[in-house]
Amino acid sequence: MPNTNFDDVLPIGRDGSLTVRGPFDPEGAKIVGDTLIRFIIVQTPQMLGMTVPPGEPVTVPVLEGPAFFKGGKKWSTKVSKTALRRFKIKPGKARAVGIAVLVTRAKETDIPAVNTITWCQDVTIGSARAATATRP
Image (cartoon, rainbow, N blue to C red):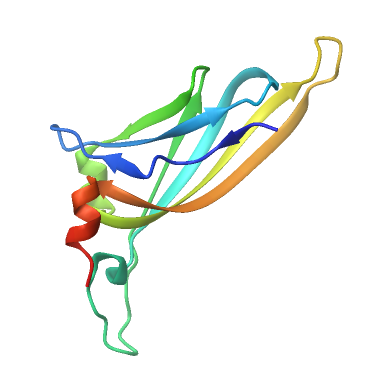
């Protein structure tokens, strides 16, 4: 079964855009067409080292987007600086959740099957230094 996840660090480029990417290992499966990847990135105040008084309402920023795996060893997409601002995502710790939808077949004569892969992991937005800078 194919396998994927996010890179541990999702870099912010000089233009302010965020690169969301990760490795993709088909593990021998014959993938038919492109693989659709959807993701969300969530960042709570606590992840950024902020304290929130008990009972105080908190707005949790959620960034979502698509990507495609078209072969090779990684999938990748860019999120614009404007989108990062709109969704209030900042350098530092975050939680990333993904789903990949792919069509596979074992042999050319087999009927294709639709498969999904889901994953969730902690990531760092920006650089590895951003994660240590936000520790309480």
